[in-house]
Each structure stands twice: as structure tokens, then as C-alpha cells.
Image (cartoon, rainbow, N blue to C red):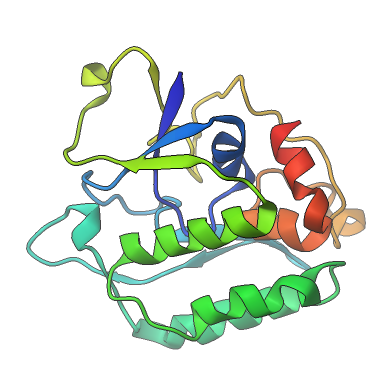
Length: 205
């Protein structure tokens, strides 16, 4: 059994758990783009509680995810990086990983899918997981997937997520936990900046 996933922008802990626990992963690149999902959004834990960071995109003649372009609207790279600085500068491992993460807010990618996959590869390197990632060459609806493929493409989402028996969000150290309590299933950056090299044990545990 192995999962099929949609790409994510610094996806949630639950998404990276799938990469850590399954040797093989099928990554969706041929689906139609969907708004208000982790495809172009991540959620971080801030002094004021959860905050969503969203990449603005440009939709052209095709809605295929691989064709969705990143917009420069709103100076979002600057906004997102400074939101991370504000949220995590006091976390135990922010300075350790900042040089690896900051380039994603300085360089420019044309396509959302390409940036997401470069982020995925870097996070896997930092967390020390090595999934065998393969890519779809056409879109297959859920009812056409082989029985050994677990469909998480629409299950892992910011609003009304589908129950996932494999994922149980266990508390770990968060900077603002005393103020807000533990905030589950934040962006993988929340786990990385707070737990550092121990992140891998959380993901596979």
C-alpha cells in the first residue's frame, strides 16, 4: 500500500508523515487546481494563533496543476518570510535551518508545482527522509485508482479534513503553547523549527 498525494506549499505535518512512513509515494501533478487548499497554502503557529500564508497564483487557459503559475502580487515572498521570522525566530532550531529555507522566499519559480516539489525535496533532506516519489502522467479519479493506492489528495486539507486513522497529532514543543495550547498539524516548518533533528522520530513514531 502506498499513498497518492497532491503537492503542498510547506505542507502540514500529516502530509510529511505519509512521506516518512511509506517507502513509495505517488505525487499528483495532473489534477485540476483547487482553491483554499495546501497546494498553495501553509498554516503556521504565531503569537496570535494559527496564521495561513497563501501564494497568489495565475490561472490561464488550463486548470491543470502543472500549468498554474505563481503571481508576484502583494510582495508575498517578503510577507511570508517576515511572518516566519516573527513566528519562529525564538524557536530552538530556527537559526539552524533558516539558511536552507530563506532561498524559497528570495528565488522565483514560474510554476507552483515546481516550487512545491523543490520545497518537498529540501524538507525531506532536512528531516532525513528518503521516499521514492513517482509522478502521475494523467489524472485518475478516486474510483479508478488501483486497490493498493491510498488516496489522500483531498483528505489532507485546511477545512473539513477527512478522518485519517494513520495520523494522530501528538503534542510537541511549540513556542506559544502556553498562550494557545498545542496547535496540531501546522506546517512542517513548525515541527522543524521547534524539534529540529528529532522531527523524524515524530513523523515515523
